[in-house]
Image (cartoon, rainbow, N blue to C red; front, top):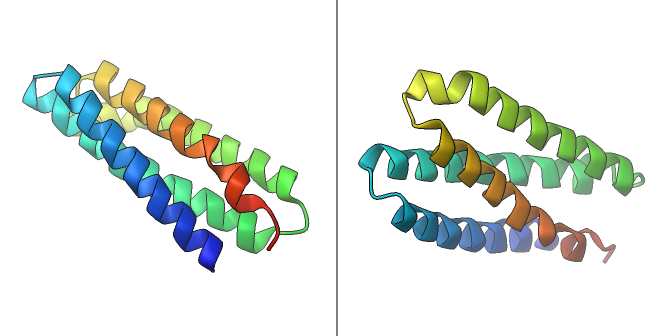
Length: 116
């Protein structure tokens, strides 16, 4: 449980910090909303994916990690096809930020996937 909370906390810090930085790049209020919305989506999916790997398939970490990558990819596709249109967000800030959030939080996963 300690690894999950530590990963969630560090992911939150990384994603919020990157969201703030990306929101500065796009001065348009809709683009900034898209960035922050994508940050929320990314955080939820990252924690869900990490829980899946850590709790559900601890004996097959690589298979679970692959399933987590598939979950991230499907989320990005659904965000592009449905979420952006439904929310009326500009596609570039919404999708680029979501991909960036997934990237930075995926980089720290291996540290927390080590067995205690």
